[in-house]
Image 1 (tube, rainbow, N blue to C red):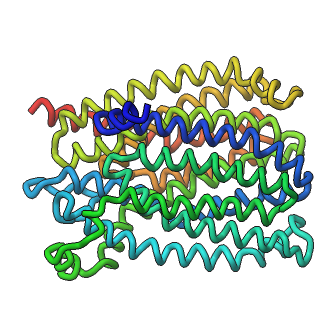
Image 2 (cartoon, helix red, strand yellow):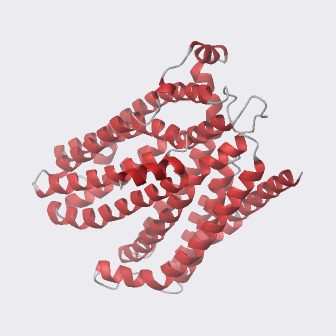
Length: 460
C-alpha cells in the first residue's frame, strides 16, 4: 500500500493532491460531526458556546495572511516553469528562473512570515480584552477562557509560520504532502480535544490540544521544503541584495497578494454575516435552518475544490513556460470536471440534503422551498464561477478586488431590504442577485477572455 501511494505521488502528483485533498475534507467533516456534540456534552452549552466562538474568532486571524500564501504558491509554480527567454507576465516577480529563483522566494517568504506571525501574536493577545468586555460572551475575570484563548493564539501563530512553507511546497506541485498532513492534523487535534474534554480539562485542555497539533504541523511542514532551497548560494544572495533586498520583493509581491487577500476577506465576511442578519431580523429560530444548509453547501463546495485546485500550480507553471496550448487544454479539462461535479452536487444538495439534515439533527430544522431552491441555484453558479476565478488568479490576473467588495456590500444591503418582507427567501436571494450584478458577470467575462486569448495563441 505504501509503495502504491509513493508511486502515485511520484508519477501523478496532481491526482495524489486531489486524493489527499479529499482525505483532508473527509477528516474535517468527521471531526466536526464528532467534536460539536461531544463538546456540548462534556463542556456544557455555555462553555461549548465560548469554544465555538473562539474558533470563529481565531479563524479570522488567519486572514492576516492577506493572500500572500496564494501569491507565493503561484509565484513558485511560475518561477519553476519560466526560462530566460520567457516574457515576464503581469502579477509575478522577476525572479531568476528555476530552482534558484524558488530558493530566493523561500528566503523572502521566511523573512515576511516571521513578521506576520509576530503581528498575529500581538493582535491576538491584545484582542482578548476587547472580547471579554464586549457583549455577554464571557463573565468578568474568566481565567480559564483567558488561558484557552492564549493557547489558541499561540497555535494560530504557529500555523501562520507553517503557512509560508506549505504555500511554497504547493507551488512546487507537492500539494498531496501538505493536504495529507493537514488531514492528519485535523484528526489529531480533534481526538486530543475530545480526550481533554472527556478528562475534565475543560477549555484549557482543548486549547492545548490544538496547540500541540499546530506545533506538530510547524515541525513537519519544514521537512517538506527541499534542502536545496534552504541554502542560498552567493549568486542568488547577491541577486536579492542588488534588487533591493527581501523587503522590496515583499512590497512587489504584495501588489498581487493584497488584492487576493482583499477578495478572501470580503468573501469570508459575506459568508459569516448572513446567519447573523437572519437572527437580527427574523429571530434566533431562523438561524439554524440557514446555517445548517449553508454548512452542507460549503462542505460540498470544498470537496469539489479539493479535487480541482491541485491542478492550478501546473496551469501556472505552463503559463510561466509560455506553453499556452497545454495550459488551454488543462484549463478546459478542469472546467469540464468542475461543471459536471457542481451540477451533480447541486442536485444532491436540493433533493438529499434535507434528509441528511433530518438524520443528523433528529428533527425538522432545515431550509424549505423556495429558499432551498434559490440556495441550490446560487450554489451551482457560485461553485462553477469560483473555480473559474481560481483559474484566472492562477494565470496571474486578479480583476476581483472591487467587484467582490461591491458584491459584499450589495449582498448585505439586499439582505437588510428583502429579509423583513420575504424571510429566508430574501436572505438567499440577496447574494445571488448581488453576484449576478458584479462578481458572477465579471468572472464569466474574464474567463472567456483568457480562454479566447489562449486559444488564439494555440492556433498561431
